[in-house]
Length: 297
Image (cartoon, rainbow, N blue to C red; front, side, top):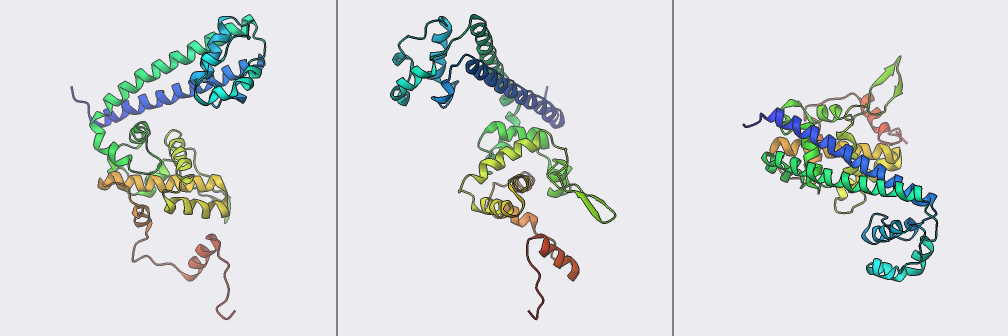
């Protein structure tokens, strides 16, 4: 039986949100294992870059076989550049793991590995369910910061593929919680924070935005980030870049076109017949950081 597009998108959204929860659970188990090692004075994290890497896990497995014995040979357990750090590794495992801590570590490791297996099974379901959206996924993956197919699926699962539901890109950005709220009373602005909407799509876009601004491959985005950051700080600048990215994604899905550097500029251009007063123009200039001087100065 062929699923309706709305039903298919809703099922994708539920699966992707569950995948997000599993990712959070795995991160919690990572932190819990690291805390157990710290309590036992096992400082592997100070030597290896990833406590859950191949070498670190081999050392940890050896430790858990006999927690009282830390004098085993480390060289067969480490790989590549870590062979140069054998003295540091020897000092890092010079701790004491109690039987209770060893039992807890085994439970944590088993749960972490089981979560990884369940996540892999879930991802197979997601990829199978997302098969009808291959064209849209290919388009989204041309955008900066969206290299993973699961990131693209996550975006589609939240906003869909039919952009007719949103009259404009600004409506979509507002729905996603990426536009400042208008909390004004008696001529005084009380808050310009973004709304709490988009609790799943907003973190995803912010993650993409953080990846973009660290790269020099897209100067049109990085330069805008640096300009806003100088005036408003990192957090507001990242939200602006996330909004800029979502605006581009809106037009990419609506027109079925790949990303290009001019896409967001074209979409943000005001109508040709738009008119404003001199006072409004001065206010806009002030908000952009310009100092207003008289014409005679």
